[in-house]
Image (cartoon, rainbow, N blue to C red):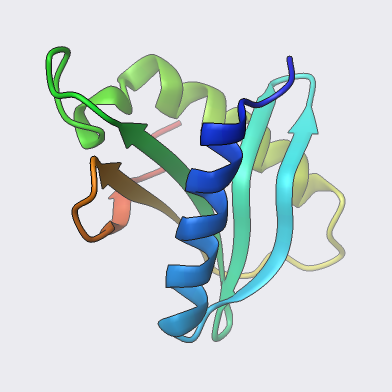
Length: 116
């Protein structure tokens, strides 16, 4: 499935924001059979898997509320696949960048853990 122009713009906005916070881009729109990871960033020694969520309206809840347990499970599986290609496993975390309308990005570090 191709991303919409709006979705690509949201990811670009999130990436630019994270770069201002000192993170560097490792991969964008990394895909595997389990799904897609929007951004893979490096924060010091930590590898950060970033889910970008955009909501232009709050009728169905906030952007952060849209990262459901089912979505988390898919992200965890994709991250495990990504990590399986690395020779050594770095410290990792899962962050969410929530973009609601024109508000400033909300950066949720350690938004969820790998709970198995």
